[in-house]
Amino acid sequence: MISTTYISAESDKFTPAALLSLLQQCHQNNTGVGLTGMLIFGNGIFLQSIEGDDAVVDALIEKIKNDPRHKDFRLLSRETIHKRLFGNWSMGFERLTEQTLLDAPGLGNFVFKDFSPDYLSKNPTVVENLLQRHRSQHWDPLVREIDARERFIEELRRALAGARQQNEMAALLIESLIESAGTGSIGSDHLGLCRSVLATLRRD
Image 1: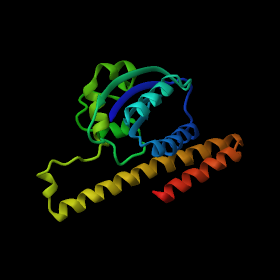
Image 2: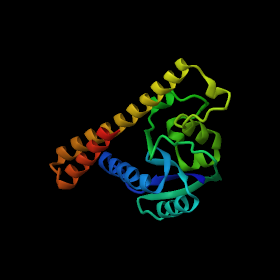
Image 3: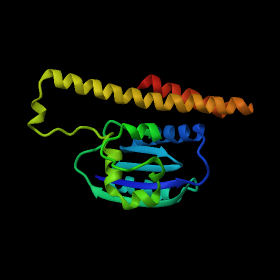
Image 4: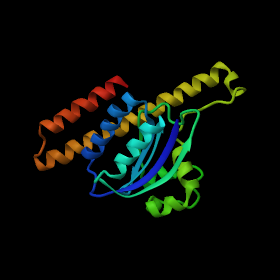
């Protein structure tokens, strides 16, 4: 099993609807082939970590590299892993903003404008810290002996992380509806996307 991380830039501006559609595609496709991972998007930049079977991950990375929606693709890492780092997510998602960076530890002087292929390809520690906040906990054998109260706290943390994922998807859906309503362009494809997102939110 491998974990691969890349960064790329959007070729054309991703609307909320386009971003939501991409996330839905990830959730639907990844579950069937055993992929998990995390996608961080902001400043027109994608930072994504994908983990799973070697051949499946490599094939997906090659597909992403040739996807016309991306440009300036850079492979940051490809390494063998023995446990999933993002086992909770078929594809976790964070929309990075100036505000979310205020709550992110260990980033030093990193600012929103630094979320770019040039900067991140030269600063692997920043990439690690950005992704670390979303990783599953893989406890040491001694830590597995924690008492019931600590286990309960961990369950609450996981529930909160899941709620944040739902909020991100719901926010994208609302933004895409407002955007389309303003131009009078809500059609059957958009309604289909709404139904798909609603089904995902209910299932989770």
